[in-house]
Length: 640
Image (cartoon, rainbow, N blue to C red; front, side, top):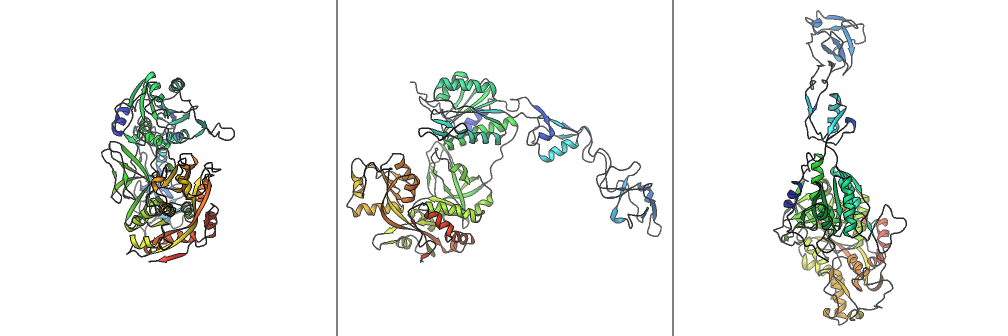
């Protein structure tokens, strides 16, 4: 089968320019006339001219009495003027039409007895005082809204005041989303449980929302199986009904590049491959003057591709400009190497530590979905860069309100599910507060504290010489930092194996068998140090293990590798094994502590964290995860 290599990949900016320049976005769709009452958020397709003046008649600007100004001339306190109510003076409220023959309003507070049959005027008033005259806002025939502006609620009021009950606006494009993949199941049409060999199709639901936010009218087509004939037929059908078509998945280079084949057969491929990660397999094309966008199947890739190409296209058609996101200076929590030649977009959480805002990255795989709804900011690594350095200032685009960042506490170090539970209960306790956690290992967390890149860290570093946890390492890494060591939990560490333990793994010695594949934690992780200690105690060299060099950054990542069959065994905690239905061989009980600098401990935000940690609800929730002993939870174990 013929393989389709990427054409010469284009940069993000170049690809977007090539694509958008092929379409006259201003004239791509004919305008439509709609009711002004339904026009909020739409963009005017032509100038709007006033059909009537505003106000259309002279109106009172104050509550009082409408009079003819000349009737008050020469009035003084000694020789006041007396005006008969209903003949020379007329009671009037703000906004009411002025009676014929009157040209000014006497403020009601200036009338000594407003309930009398006659009012007394001691000071003359001038013509048009306290009166809104005809056309004060605008005159009939005047332009009240230019072309190409978004109709706000205020603009709706202006249009109605001008007598415009209908208005010409830019048409909203119909955007059909075609999900592809023989392994996918539509969750909307699923009747019963999801088959074990199929995957839920959810990208189209996210894209549907993004299309609507950009100003389009989304429609999700039926899932198309992985073959070029089916996709070509589906694309042809979609083009007959839509203004824009988005094909999700099926656009990588290779034999399965069905999107390329379908678009090339029906029209023209303009860009095939963009030098960005995630999102490199993006395809941009046109068929009969209609835009076709092939975006990758992985969630992060799909959303970034949409943001860079589909969103500006749809915004351009409806006449809206994409406002740049607010930005601020941040400091990466760790080194972020990147491949030169590719623009990389990295989603991060943000939190203030001292005077700095620390950016903690999410896992950078394109297939992950968690960063989509948890990210606070976006770091962009330029194509000519080889990555970002930890603690070096750079600009981040904000995905949240700036106020959210001040309520975020950055916790780096060893990963544990008890930290995830802490984040949940903290948010429940005080919605203004959040935890931003980065999984860089226990030693990495201590280094981050020393560099003021974290508010506190999680650590479980075992010292075999003293049979204690964390203290020796703190003295080594942070000798001059005043801090407290607060226990969060004791947990069971052991070997995680597949359900039923098909390889009959019972002890550390079994890991050197040639049929056993291991998965390890990264260097600097407390679990890695404990694992290395246990290997040494059993006289095992790391080179004797198949897979010792393969590393993951969290207990759950190790558990998933065992669950998916990539590895037969991995060291981790019981709760991670339980979460994925794995069998567990316990090896030791281990203490997991929070290392908290004095400055953080005295922070009112952390005092709320302590309240949560010491609450029965939190401790019970952690214990329910399995494998946890909460006997010392919240206790100050040691102080420096």
